[in-house]
Image 1: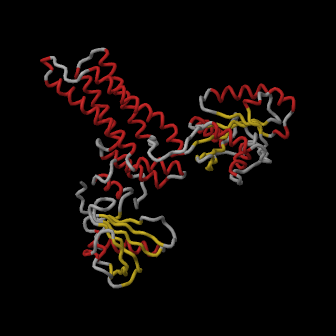
Image 2 (image 1 turned 120 degrees about the vertical axis):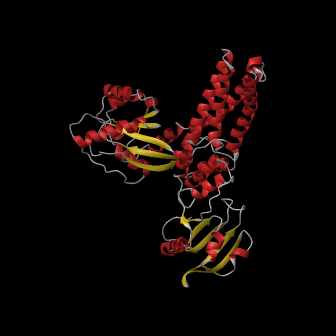
Image 3 (image 1 turned 30 degrees about the vertical axis):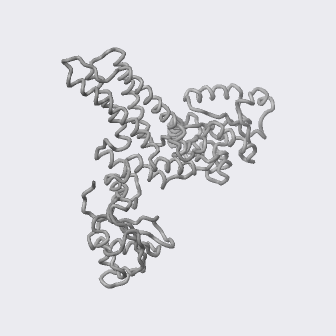
Length: 454
């Protein structure tokens, strides 16, 4: 349990003018603290999960008429006494309420502190706590459903089951160490191999799900690249259907990465227009070209654009060879089809190209279909278990590696203490996912990314 007696306060709704704003408090003294500035029912006597109308004041000076919701421990989000104050949505009013509560003994909540307290008080495990932030930040229905499945414990339940099965054998292995001089075997090696095979098959499926989960959560970074003046910026504008990037006939106009998002097939694609790839003596443009190369290495998909009105078959072959070296999925986009030399088109394999005219938006829908075909993402249903979190993915990989060492160790008949060590590692990494194994640094890193009111 979190035994802190601090009462924390924060704005739980978004900043800015709105119809209402909600100020949230949590902590042992939150109800009595609000009572000090509330004129209405005696909050300390009301039942949990009730709402009360009244006036907030600062030493008798009215602040606002509000609705106060009371939640008594342990039946609240943090399992502590908690209060939510719904006031009119003026930023000035919300600020005044928080300032008055601070004067009476509350302190400002740190980022994610409400959810951190919920985790520390046993409301849910660490993976479920992280899913709270994912639900708030979900931009697609698939993202929302994946986060909801995780928050409701689907992923955590799978991990806990694996860990519990492994703990049984770990205890037998540890027992063997206590009787090392007697050369007894409590953990049957064949049964341990079968268990590890079963656990690794589940872990392998979870690891494979990360590709889909990561796309659902973070979107697909898609880089538009090519030589200067091939129509990259025009293509970005055509895809987004707005004038996002400056278009010019002057080569080298784009000096930095220009980025925007759009929804395609229920997925977020982050399109990035980049500086043209060429050797240049212009210092600023050279920096832009360097950033283009760096961005390309981080892409999940590359739209490589060629100007069909000026490019030769030899140049196309040479540029494609360079793109292949990146080992990243790419689509050859032949732009300016309306100005292309028919002789050039006869030499290009149409199965390897999407032909467009970005300036008149010709075949943009065909290009979008091709982009979607690169990512076979299925709709997430209730109960589906997907890995969407990089930390979880890394822990699963480390668990899998530790278990592989256990299997190899048994085959090579290494000493029991080495087997025990690798089993401990596997249990440790599984425990890190759900928070059964934590450090202060880990918790600080996770919850510092939350919004303050959550």
